[in-house]
Each structure stands twice: as C-alpha cells, then as structure tokens.
Image 1: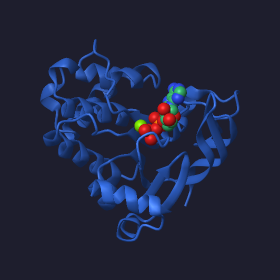
Image 2: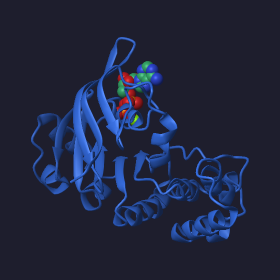
Image 3: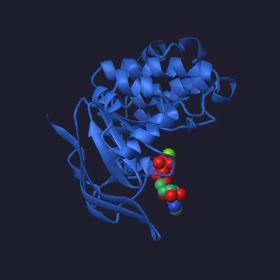
Length: 243
Ligand code: ADP
Ligand code: MG
C-alpha cells in the first residue's frame, strides 16, 4: 500500500475551539474512505485540511509527498492532484458546463484546446450530461450540477478526490444519479475521501469507514464490520438515530 495522505499528530483550532485533536491517519492510494459522524464533529475541517483549504496548527500533514505544514509548499501543486467536490457544487456561474470543465486544465495544465475539448466531452458522456455541454449551471438541476462538478474535478486527472457531503443538498430523487457517478469513479481506482450521510454508499462502495466524533477518529474499520458491529457507544448511538 502506498500512502498518499498522512496525518501525524495533527491539531487544528478555530480560536479556542479544538476542531481536530491529535489526528493520526494514513490514507493509501486507491482507497475509498467514507467519513461519517455527527454534525459539528469536524468532518469538513478534516477533509478541507487535505487540500489546504484549512490550515493546521501543529503536527505534520503529508499529501502526495508535500508537507502542508511547511509554508514553502506550493498549495497549487497539491490542488493539481487533489480535487474537491462540495455540497453546494460551486460551479462557475458565468461559464457553460463545458467551460467549467475546461477551465482548470487550460489554465493550470496548459492542455491544448483540442485535447481539452475531447476529454471534457468524454467526461460529460461518463456523467450522462453530454447534451448539456452548452448550458449554464443555473439551468441545470442540483443533481446535474453536482455531476458536472465531479466531471470538472476528473478533468484534472487527480490522484485524489475529496467529497464533502456531495448529495446533502440534493432532492432525494437526484441522489442516486450522483452516487452512481461516484461509484464509477471509485471503480477506476482514484483515491476518494467522502464525507457522507449515505450509509448505502459507505457500506457498498467504500472500502474503509471512519467514524469521526468531537474532533477525533473514533473508529477506522472495514465498512461491513463497522455497520454490523460498531465498537463504541457513540457509534452505536449515531447509527441507531440514522438507520
Ligand atoms: P462537520 O463538518 O462535522 O459538521 P465542521 O468541520 O464544519 O464539522 O465543524 C467543526 C467545528 O468547528 C464546529 O464546532 C464548527 O462550528 C467549527 N467551525 C467550523 N468552521 C469554522 C470556522 N471557519 N471558524 C470557526 N469555527 C468553525
Ligand atoms: Mg461538514
């Protein structure tokens, strides 16, 4: 197994609030790691540190070989290989669907227009939206926008994609289409870290499950083992409320 994200004794504070408490966690290439836990437990903070959207206060955080705690590290080098999909899609409203997907590869990777267009159209096919290429985000449903956001992330050919509650803002009937696309991504072997409330996804697609609570990793298990036999009382209580 090749580590791609390594937390060593990482702490994070927001003022006096101790959001991440002595995190020690290694994520390996190709893993699909689901992170579940109560609201306010620090899941977003944890995942956002992984591409430098949140800084850390102490410890070491190595992502794709770069130390995020070292201020000589160029954050753009990390973001090139570590994509992120947000709850609220965060598409560029002034660009078409195709424009959204082509922007970063053009600006950051200097990919040629011809290749960029071909890759973007392939990705739109993959997420089932090739007929929406020239539309603007505001004219798409939430589920469609999220699938564009995933395609946009894939266009950079990242090693890792971070997902922070990608289906939480969606109407129920749109959730499955997004989960299906995420499953396709997982099958390609891209490392995925997914904060989610979708227990079906966590059990069936994920191959590792982290239960996060009050800024700590409480359980780090195989999904089946976690769901069939949670070890901590906090996890049992959490599962009894949501399943
Ligand atoms: P989760 O994603 O599990 O709901 P978060 O990581 O968003 O949890 O938040 C963890 C804790 O940190 C919460 O108490 C939240 O209020 C606090 N927090 C999150 N972001 C900030 C911020 N930018 N400034 C201050 N406190 C924050
Ligand atoms: Mg969150």
